Each structure stands twice: as C-alpha cells, then as structure tokens.
Image (tube, rainbow, N blue to C red; front, side, top):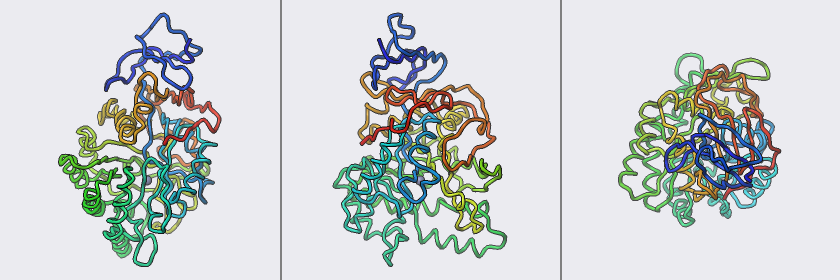
Length: 452
Ligand SMILES: [Zn+2]
C-alpha cells in the first residue's frame, strides 16, 4: 500500500514525457508503474489524465528578505508559499544589498535556522564570498556562491567597486580552491554611474518608465562578461553566468562553451527582464505602480540559446522591495525589483504555449541541469524511483487571468494583474506532501528542508 498514487499523468522520464503512474511512499518515489496498474493501491490518489508531472521545479535565483531589515514585506514563509503557488518545490534564496548578505559562516547558519522554521518548500541559501576581503570565513555550507561584479571593494573601501581586476584575481583563486560554483551578476559600476549622469542631463521628465530601459544594458553587461571570463578561466572557477540575455553576452558564453575547457553554466532570470510587466497592481490601495523594464533583449535570440543549450538554467529573480521604495518620487532611487514568484512557474508554461520552449527544455532548465551541476541529482531533478517525491504538476491547457487567484507574497503587489495566460501548475508536491492544491497551501511552515 502506497501513501500517494499519481495516476494517468504524462511523467518526465529519460528526457521525455510518458504516460505512467507514480507511487509515493513517505518522502520518496516508491515506483513508476504502467498507467492503470490494477494492483497499485494508495491512501490518496490523484487522477492526472492529460496533466504533466515534472520533477519539482527549483528556482535557482530568488531574493528573500529574512534575515534583514526588510522582512516586513517578504519572509521565508511568504516567499516559499508564493513559490509553491506557482509549482516551485525548492528555492535557492539570496539576499541582495550587502547589509544582509551571507558573507560569513555564522550569519549563514542563522539564516538556515530561520528558514527551517518557516519554509514550506525545500531551500538552499546562496552565500556571498565577498567577506573574503574582510578576512571572514566563507559560508562553506553554501552549495554555491553568489555576488555582483560591482561588489568588489572600491578605492574608498565601499561596496561600489567594480570590475576590479586585482581583487577579482585573488577572489577567484580562493573560491576555485573550494570547487564550488559561483553565480556572478556582470555589472560595471563605473559604466552604470556614468550612464545615470547622462540620463540626468537629458531633457524631459525622469520616471521609472523612461529611465529603466537603460539599465542592465548590453554594452555594460557583455563587456563585464569578457572581464569575468578571463579570470574564471585562468583559475578554473566553476562559474554560473547570471542574466545571460543580451546577444553579445550570449555570443561570449556560446564561444566559451564551444572551447570546452570551463565548468560554465549560464542562466536567464525572468523579472523584470522579460518586459511583461511595466505596471504593477497595488492590491492594498488598488492603484498602479509603474516599474518599467530594463533594456530588453531580443527574445527570439534568447529562446534560440535556450534551445541549443547555451543557456542551462532559469530563475525567477523574485525581488520584492518596500512599498515606500516603489513609490519613491525620485525615479533614480525607486525600486526596480518585481515580486513575481506567485506567477513564475505559470508564466513558463505560457512560454511553452507560445512556442518558445518545449516542456522537456522547461524541465532541464528548471531542475535537471542545475541539480546535476550542484550535486543534487538524482535526489532532485528526476522522477526516478528512490528519489525525493517532488513534483510540479501542470495543466497546459487552462486559460486564466492573473489576479483572480490568491497570491502569497507579503508585499501585496501583483506584477501581472489582468494578464491572460495559458497553462497552470495545479499541484506542488514536496517530499511526498501536497504543499499546493489549486492555489491553496496545505502544509504548515517548517515543511521545507535545507538542501546542501
Ligand atoms: Zn537577482
């Protein structure tokens, strides 16, 4: 007798989807059976005819606010509920802003302990290696590291340093010794600051809608990548290149992969680079917040890079900010991050329906590839017997309107309100427990486990 039987679904196995049944016992997949196996009995059965059973989606890049001064608008409970709501079974959380980065082992352990109490899906936390420059012990429990290129110490000892070759050389040598991947956001702060000065001098009113299209541009990011690539390759650093969506950036990654002598992953993150939301709904006031998009990539070129394997991973870049920041009248200081987690998984299904990626690619980029790189495979990222019973179950045909559903992000801002999309995650199952059933969260905080 099994605990849970997923019947008649299209199950991802050996790189493709096949109709079969999946039996769960405790936290693990007990067996994969022929569809309609007459001898299989279980305490609970779900008939998933026509639905897709994906290995649990891992969000490889999202921003949490706990611990930190901003937990009033997102914490581990609210963020992981939002994740489960869109089919995500594990989040790779990180802070941004150096004031609450996980730059040392003690801070890191504190964050893990907090998350263990309140997460509803599994999680890891990306440590930040920049404490190296302050003589701190790096958070070695972190399965991978993350930082922005601009975080290198500046000439005055602040964090506004940028593509600093001297520091980069030392840090990469140090991280490479640990054999861990490091996610790096290419960003040239000198370029960025000079660009802002230029925009200030331009005629006309400055709003987030007029300014943000200049941010995260190809000229800044692609140049940063050449710089990072030299030192990463020199030190045999395992490198995950973040935000790989501009043509010239993709071209460099494609070239390096072809060369074949680096451990190199590339990822795209969906908010706000997707340009799907320039106006968010404030669910508290009923008003609208203009957020604006960054310099848009050529999306056809990006999807080609996903199809040919240049891009390996996806992340939500869920990035809630304080309400005051969104409403800051100084557009140069207002926030750009979008709290998109509640819709992230559903939007990926919509992209499948738009013909931009296959369901198989979706699985590879949301779980399989990353689980393999980070050493979690096949516990995570597969539907094989004996592994964690994590499933993201999708109805590819449902057409619905964002905003009709309940959302769980604490900041109460909906970036995709009113948008019609096709495809929806209807169940999220984490280690055998149904965490989300059609927009309802069914487990208590603390179900999530730290995955190292
Ligand atoms: Zn981010």
